[in-house]
Amino acid sequence: MSSTRQSVQISQETFDGVVKENMEDFGMDLQEALQDAIHTFRLQGADLKGIITDGSRGDNGTNPLVEVIKEVEHASTDIRGITLEHTSKVLEKLYCLCKEGGIDSISVAGRHGGVEASMSAFTALNNSESVVNLILKILSLLVEDAENKDKFKRAGGARMLMDILTRANKGHDNIRLSCGLVSAAATGDEIAMEQFMDLNAAQEFSKLLKESTNDESLVILICNAFKALVTSDDNRVVASKAFTNARTFAERGMVEALLLASTQLQCSSSAVASLCMALKSLAVNEAICKSISEQRGIDFVLQALTECIKIERKPLAKSACSLLSQLGGSDENKESIISQGGLERLINIMSNFSDDPSVLQEAFTVITVLSLRSAQNSLKAVQAGTLDLVAEAMECHTSAASMQRQACFLLRNLAVRSPESRLAILEKGLEPLIRQAKRTHPSCKDAASGALRDLGFDDYNS
Image (cartoon, rainbow, N blue to C red; front, top):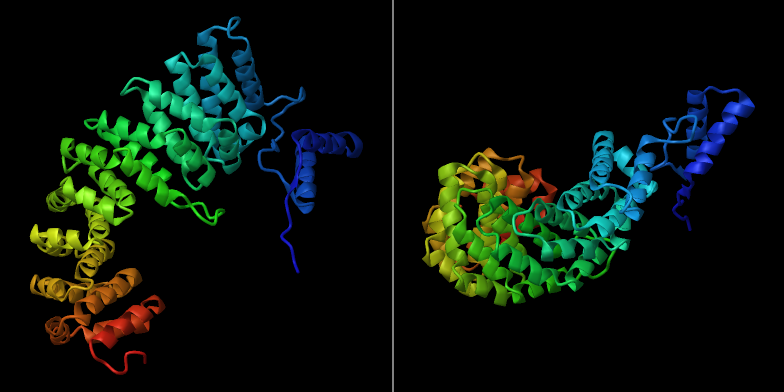
């Protein structure tokens, strides 16, 4: 049985020693010595990530990035002997070096203690808002690297951020930077997600959102942080607690907070799309969907659908439809959506954004959900004009596999319980379009076969 070869970990000192040996023993110049060392270590399967390989350590063994990290470490341990102004300059230099150097410099900074030095600086100097601001900017860059992200987690990054969020004054940049860093730290990391939840993130973010409903940019940042804490996206774990986290957020007032924000913001604002996606992430069970509906959540999303047509915002249309699909999973909500003019709004969305298959796909999904197990709703959807728009979309966007697949699902749901709808589908000539989708896109095979079967064709599997 074969095994995956593991990368060999080497230190900066080991790499520098080989370079020095190449120069002293074999008479190579610096660039030759560097290239030979890089080649040799790569043949050995060594991991050179974070190793300084460009010769910038110089004759005295120093590198500007490594040296500034040492200065940050020194400032953290000698807070009486070093002025706040000097510390700020050192942190600013570290930030600029990481930002200008890109991912390579970020990896080097992590390998040489940048995360730990920044965390130590926070512990020693967290009474200065400007210093904390710089530290958060530095850490936001450093966690772009996966190894640095793990170091931040192990060094107590979650507690640091929750401390800032609970004590900082509303509107300060530290709040915004902390929300962004929560998103980065929790994305794709189940353990980090659990750390934040154990530190009462559900209650704190719900409270923060309620206090920030008139601040569009902060609302977006809070929504992004919330979604990172309720999304199962770490493929290293067998079972995620994301579903449980969403329920905890609902219990701590996030439904109220999101819908309160929805009443304060203009429906044309970019924050509305974030609110829609956050509500979708929160609506993980029947009880929460019902709670959203009871607090006028359906009114909010239907109004968003109306507004996105006026301002021609496709991202908002997709987000609003996506939320409506989630809420429509509740049979009680289905009736509310339809009785409040939901089908008419969806028809308008499909008509106005007929050039974009991704928007059409989301609208098709909503009608698919609304017509599930309901012959009455299927017939209402047909009578509203759904079939003409589906036919047009399938004819115009033949290469849009995902949209074609969703169109087949929609037609199947319309046909399966409603003879009237079945007849209308056939009269509109949709059968050839379903068969074309099946022939063209392997991903459409099952959905198209199901639609043909429920339309009454015996050769649905051929």
